[in-house]
Length: 115
Image 1 (spheres, one colour):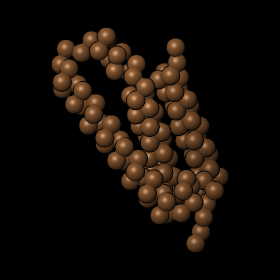
Image 2: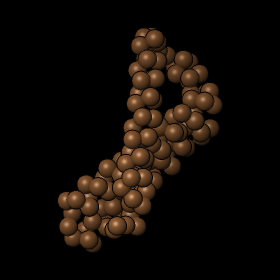
Image 3: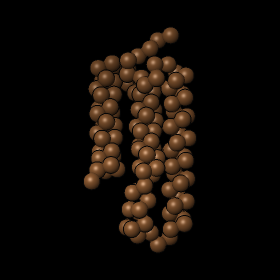
Image 4: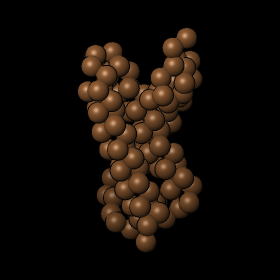
């Protein structure tokens, strides 16, 4: 079995499981948010703020944010290894993706848990 240091789960099976688990988490988060919008047609700042003041919602949103990052990384890693044949270009693309995902996660955590 060939392993690569840039994949997340070190094997196809674990990457597949991470991909599926993150998809389920994102589906649940999406369903919850759509339902919230449907049940609050006149959504204002107070309702939105009170939703995100709750710890369980912050944790659920953080879990969704981390799921997006993991899901995106695995998908983009697969695409980059399939279609970018030059290893130096592929490494550059993967490095850019990692840095962007890291920045987005840090920014999301600051927005979510910041003052």
